[in-house]
Image 1: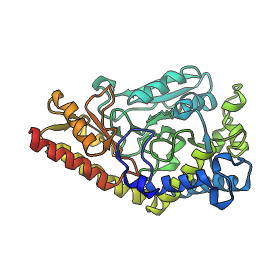
Image 2 (image 1 turned 90 degrees about the horizontal axis):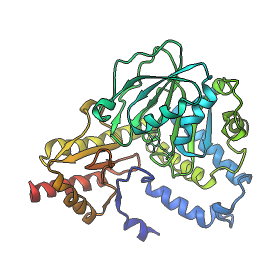
Image 3 (image 1 turned 180 degrees about the vertical axis):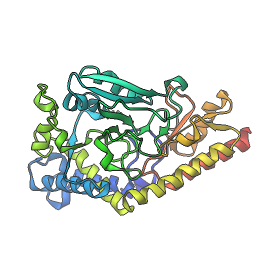
Image 4 (image 1 turned 120 degrees about the vertical axis):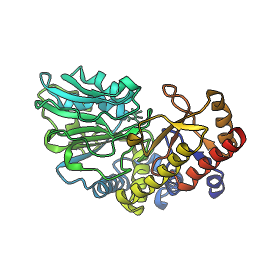
Length: 363
Ligand SMILES: *Cc1c(COP(=O)(O)O)cnc(C)c1O
């Protein structure tokens, strides 16, 4: 097994994304024989005491790492972050009420489209005018808004809020899919946080939802059983068969995160990696960044070549160096290096080395 791991590429893919090496190893073992019980975790009942203990530990670690007290539910759902675009307003917004949304890219645009089925939406700010290359600031929230929806990190365009936005006390609902648990969170400002696991906290297949308990059931709308947060809250995310293996891998990732010093520890690691890469982008004449410097994401680093002709040669040079997933999203072009929590500084250094060699060859 260690042979396979040591041959691994540097994976800069935006998602599904890198996970810690230890997590891959432990998950592989559990797929063969979970803790010596003689069964693969893949074939074990979700009602078994072993699996119940996994869910309990996952919830407990999330609470501990995030400082999330008992006034919030911690749920493991399916359907991806994309399903929360409609589940959040379906559960939390009355038909005649208003929610404020900030439009910072592809994902928030999709969230705005869905809320229209369930209530009034006011888009209080947008960075669409500059192809989402910055985070709008100084926006005002209508005082009657039930919540303000933001996307804390914009995976495709590479922008990130550097602090929690000011909302005049109105609770935030935040799509944290691509920077969840990469930095400390002011939890008390949030009514709800959601994240598809596959960017930063686990594999594809499970979606983390953290929601204020007293918000659940706040509308009188009829909600189908499976789409009602109350259903999953009442049954501890076990109303139906949960995505058992992804929850296990998420739990392992949380153990790893705790061992990194939690959110403060991982933030230092993430700042160091982002600085290393952005410094190279800013000093290397063959590359430049695509977003406003003060809004640069620590997770998804977007950059362009000085000459579009250099795009393919640079991707080829990366491939030769064992670097995977560096091609930019089609809406931005160029390159995107996703450097989530589990990315090591030495992998970022490997990319920087390729950039430096490249500028010697083509500069
Ligand atoms: C990837 C992503 C999504 C979509 O997540 P799914 O789990 O694929 O539905 C939503 N929001 C953000 C910010 C993302 O990065």
